[in-house]
Figure 1: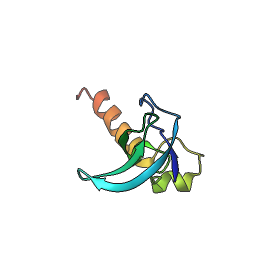
Figure 2: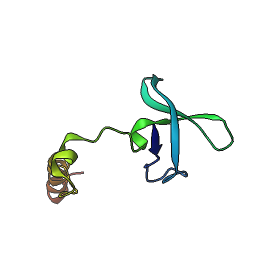
Figure 3: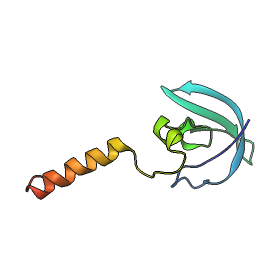
Figure 4: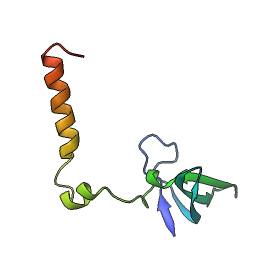
Length: 86
């Protein structure tokens, strides 16, 4: 099973690897793979193309960049800021 690193700030973003295994390590869903030097590495599955997509993003099908919950939280934050709150 191959995967691509998709995390925006990972130095290997866009590179493809073959997963050796996928398992729960340290309470996290992680992929184990061998790098170009043959060393075993691990990465959070959520930082790869094998991550489970959020249900809202699946339903939106690329038609929306923002989740309703995030927009509601932003609106509440802006309203509090407008009222002089922090």
